[in-house]
Length: 84
Image (cartoon, rainbow, N blue to C red):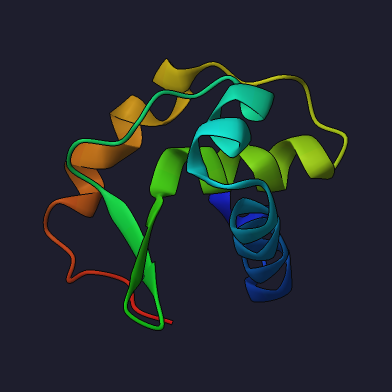
């Protein structure tokens, strides 16, 4: 599932986040604010599930709900933060 996420797609979603702003971006893709997990790009924090969800939706996959990524979080806890 996450193997389909490319750096270019993530950076595209980050650019869209920057253009729309956090609240509008989260509303557009149906996600809430992240409380624990963030993607950090050039010292800016982005809601990780919303960015990933935007990548999948932009790839014409089915609409995702906020809980889709929750099972993946336990695996992510043991990894260092992703910095781009």
